[in-house]
Amino acid sequence: MPRGLRNILVMLILAGAAWYVWATWGTLKKTLLGFDERYTLPMLMVPLASLGVNGAIGRILAAEFGVRLGIIECFALATVNAFGNYLPVPQAGAMARGVYLKNARQLPWASYAASVVVTYVSSLAISGILGLGGLGVMALADRPAPWQLWLVFSALALSVLMFTPLVKWVPLPRPLRAFGQGLNLLRGKRLLIGIILLQVALVGLTATGLYLACQALPDGRGVTWAVAWMMGLMLMASGIINLTPGNIGVEQGAAELTARLLNVPPGIGFAASALFRAMAVIVVFLITPLLSGYLARRMARMKTEACLPIEGLKTP
Image 1: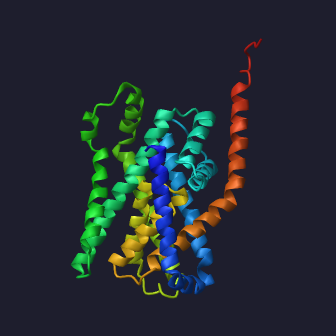
Image 2: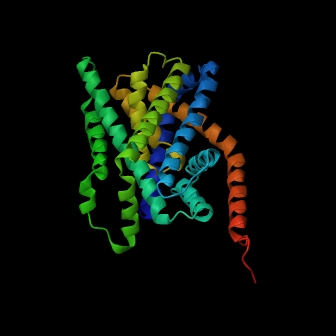
């Protein structure tokens, strides 16, 4: 996206979020001031668990290219990736993780790009399929299933086409052939089953975090986990429009729209998603300095070991 257009969209999103807060400040203030502190600890545990699942996804994908990441290492990479997404630099988190894997683990950029695409697209496809399933259950239970959500989730579910043999017939230019080979490698059935299960776990964690946020707010205690599940799916899907740091504004708008369509009290979707994101920010900003230092030391040690002479060989 051209930088000028991106900057305009960022300003529009942030201005829209600021206007919403100003227009509904009385309700939002009353809602947030009634926060129940008993939910703080479990809400902090949700982003920690999500980082663990994201780390596991990265570990599985890297292993397909022969890179064996340690458990702490992959958790640290997921944390640094999340931290980078809060910086005012597009895809800073993914770039930081890629730089580490390239320099410390010699993972080619094309292979890393393929793993990133598989992660994002599988997340969108799972969100769409699960969303359609949730709407189907709501319709069978004679609960309102808004057509707008049917449309959004159907579009997301079409992402599953990337994992079908049809994609092999799409010609790629010569510079992208290595990237295409990486995608073909990562489309294996055995691998995708593991990734799908972990993506479903991420949706469940996001829904749980939003549910806890709703329960912690006085006006949100009537929100069920099923409704939080639908909001969580839209929250994750909104990540495709990652324009602002931490997806601020887009994420809250998606949660607010979903909440309104599901007849949740006004402002709860926005307030719950803001509270959910605030807990994630606290966790990420607290542990990133420690884990980034761990990665830096590990990378320096691996580079030193790579430069050591092999025993039995003469060195000049």
